[in-house]
Image (cartoon, rainbow, N blue to C red; front, top):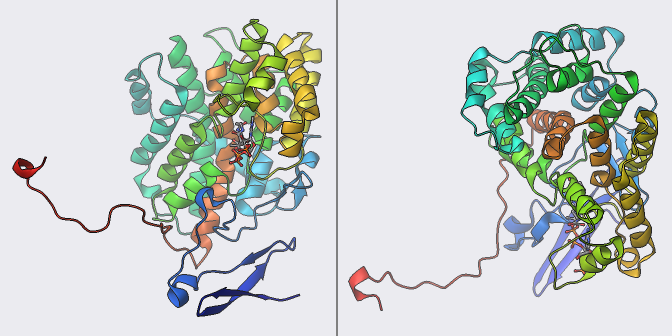
Length: 429
Ligand code: CMC
């Protein structure tokens, strides 16, 4: 097997080294390409571009494999614990008992927001999209913690991580309370991570929301399955922003903005809209699939397809089963689940989807679980952000630790006008 690639273009002949990862995936190292040849690599959408080496998450899109630090995600489904997974992703190993308990205690200490931040929620209109509030408030956190802008060691990263992981859930819950005109509920230090979040979402003064184990496990699982997905759009955004040495709060706030889009995390909202449209009888599943295939229409089968997976997204499999389990546990029959199953059935037998290898992705079933718990649709992508936060932090920190960290600055192929002259306003036609 050759460990160099040969590039020939006219007189140019170059040997380019090939690098190999621990799972044997290989890439051509073109770092010297422009300096040696004047050429750049052209790859809009970066489908063929490796932006970094990373030891956090492994995906095999052909086989439908996803592992966090080498552990298959299916293994987290048995006893789901989001905090454990967050630690694993960020610090590299599962926490020891002592690490786990002291980190959980730290999360409790940092759950409250500065009282000054509460006033900032008041400035947003009731109808403000919670993703806009989330991004703004994560950025605002940096104003309250200027001492955490420069993070050089694992200790300061740990304490900033504890603040971010803990406060994102308070911000998320307050964004929801604000949109409903409900009083903000302070975090309860007696509660664990997920029950505390659900308490801040759903408790009312003198009427505490009680979270049972099944609901707690379902939310933990949803968060875990969203926790990292290597160089996706929002994580690449966090790395891009972080590469300028922007602080962790600012970098994660940018990640929230990237996640908001309907082709990325916002797809979970679009899936629900699509299912509701069908449920309301505005279109049948068959007609919707036909529309999604029609190149004249902008409709897509939301929650289907993935840049990396050309097979079942393993997260969708687990979430589909969890949706069924949760609904049967709560005794609720959600007609949207039947519609989702029907759409899946039609698409998986349709040559359009088969040939393009389009399968259900993480967003296809996650919304049905959140809906069963009572989370409103406009909070779905906020939940995705809460889940993805450990991944963003892990990548930001990995990049910081890497001595080879350069500011990210892609090149382009210029296709504009050639040189021409400035014409004063009075002389323009
Ligand atoms: N419905 C109908 N056609 C589709 C779909 C879909 N959901 N997804 C891809 N295609 C078609 C697309 O039209 C194209 O066809 P053709 O080759 O004839 O031009 C082909 O499949 C390849 O699609 P692409 O857009 O070039 O693929 P991509 O890797 O750039 O995009 C994607 C991946 C996820 C953005 C896309 O599949 C999509 O828009 N899916 C729907 C939105 C969605 O569910 N997004 C969530 C992604 S997973 C979680 C996350 O990242 O947040």
